[in-house]
Every structure is written in structure tokens, then in C-alpha cells.
Amino acid sequence: MTTITARERLINAAVESFAEKGFSGTTTRDIASRAGMSPAAVYVHHDTKESLLFTVSLEGHRHSLDVISAAAATSADPVERLRTMVYDFSLWHADNSRVGRIVQYEFHALTPEHRAEIATLRRSIEKTMQNALADGVDKGVLDVADISGTALALLSLGVDLVRWFVPGGSRTGHDLATLNAELAVRMTRRT
Image (cartoon, rainbow, N blue to C red; front, side, top):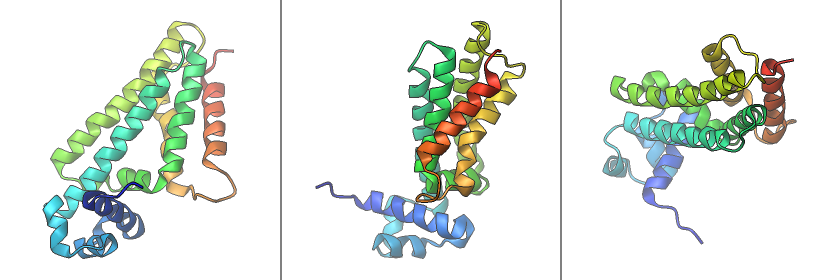
């Protein structure tokens, strides 16, 4: 049996608190209470509430970058690569919708330095999608006039899931990821 560390309990509690009350509505006391710690214990691991938000955001963005990068490496066929990238990116956002909602909608609460670091990860995610689209255009199988705009639109299919997706609802994450992947292919494939 795996034991969860105090730091992991704290991060999980922060995710739950931020998802429920938003960053500005959450206190370090709320987080500590959820983690089963004293408020002072929070400061052993993080000097501010914003530092906790940054940790959640950094981990979330790194995981989503890992997901899309791994998907980009799955196939030499640009159409299948695109399908897999949109599917995996969408599924990650459905499976991690609480974290995704926090990292997308609490971005403004980060310090300028932390926003800059997260923005670098976001640009890497966008660049991964742009490269896949450009490869498909170069190989003559995708028809995309605006690569950067289309990359953002395709990524938004997954990112937007965090706004409304509810686990256990009428559609599963797999169903929505499959739909998004098929939409992406239909939107970009050369006919």
C-alpha cells in the first residue's frame, strides 16, 4: 500500500479547495483543514497560498505537455498523429478536470514570474501541435491555412472540457476525447 506524503496531502487539499472556492475564496486554513494539518504546517512546504497554486499549475502543465509530446511521437502518419494528440490531450483534461479548471482559470492569480514560467509551458504545448499540423501540411495530407490559429483551436477542444465536464455524467471522457479527435481530423484533413 502506498502512503501519501504530507506534501501530496497538501497539494490534493489545495486542488479540492481551489476547485470548490476558487483561489481568492480559499484560505490557507481551508487547505490545512482538508489536509488534516495545522495552518502553520502549510508554511513548512509553501511560503504562500500562491506558491501552492503555482505548484498545482506547474504540475498540471507539465503533465499535459508530457501527454501531448508522447502522443506526437506515436505515429509517422500525420493524420493518426493528430487524432492521437487531440484524443490524449482531451482525455487528460477530462480525467483531470478539477486540476485543469484551476490551471486554466486561476492563471491570473499567479505572480508575474510564475505566469511567465507557465506561459513558457503553454507555448511548448502550442508548438507541439503547430509542428504536427505543419508536418501534415508539408506531406500534403492536411489542409491548414492558419497553423497557429488552428493549433489553438484544436487544443481548445480539450482545454474547454475542464469548464463543463463532470465525471460520471452522460458522456465519458473517452467519448468526448474520441469526438474531439474525429472533429480535429475532419477540420484539417485535405479532401
